[in-house]
Length: 359
Image 1 (tube, rainbow, N blue to C red):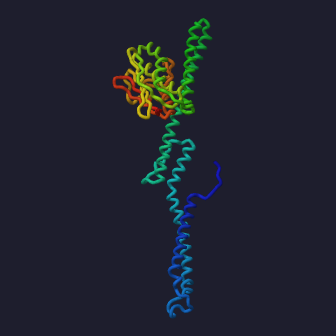
Image 2 (image 1 turned 180 degrees about the vertical axis):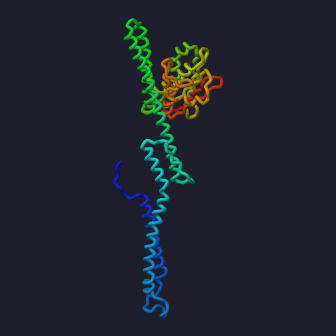
Image 3 (image 1 turned 45 degrees about the horizontal axis):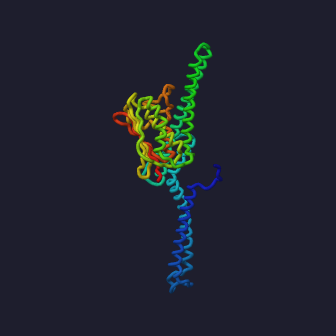
């Protein structure tokens, strides 16, 4: 932003200090005049020819007062310039750090030393902001790299299949079409997931009253065939839990949670329980499943994009695209809620979503 040049803060403070001293000196002279000189007799020879008269005192006092005022002004300018420089030195460090951040260097920190004051509080807040921005930028870069890799994988597979079919005309076209359809479906699912994640991050959706218990029942009806196919028992319990938000996004949130609970479960004989209830001013959805034990240090990373299971996997053999819990986390944040993941010692995961409730 272009601005016209003006006086620096240091010069303004210096002028303020000097002006304050000048005003203080003028007030002191006024006090001397009001309470001393005005009561001295103004006679040609003074009092009985001994005491000096007002005329002589003024002529003697005026040059000394003028010299004192000049000294005060000089002292005010010099001392004010030095004092303002010392006071504004922390602000100079903060400005330099802001310029470095503006040029792309987010790893620099001020780490201002000394006791707590307004400038050091500002520096600490600026350091905290830089840490958050650096973390967010790094997360976005990882997300972009992973998304590019995930989108490139089905395209590369499609090209390989087409190259093989072109070099071998006798190859079964039915198998080729089936594999191409599978790869294309995966690419479409990934693109839709990325668009949904972007939409929920922006938060530009129309809010309406949504009963999470009805959403849970609809999700269970949709995913019951998948649970039956894998030998998983799917139960929905609880009562009404109303919240304000996007019915489409909340349906996607519960669907992703239940689908993950079914997929990441025991090979057979597992269970998935979906429970909804109203707790005070919050509406709660709990999705609990059985499964293999999860390391506690892994759980906080499950909401990262493209995180699957116990490690990042970029093969097309997995049924998911690694955005399920990332989308859930984004939808919960967009609805001003919280998401808690608690692993069970015996295996499985308890996922709790708390959203602002409605009467």
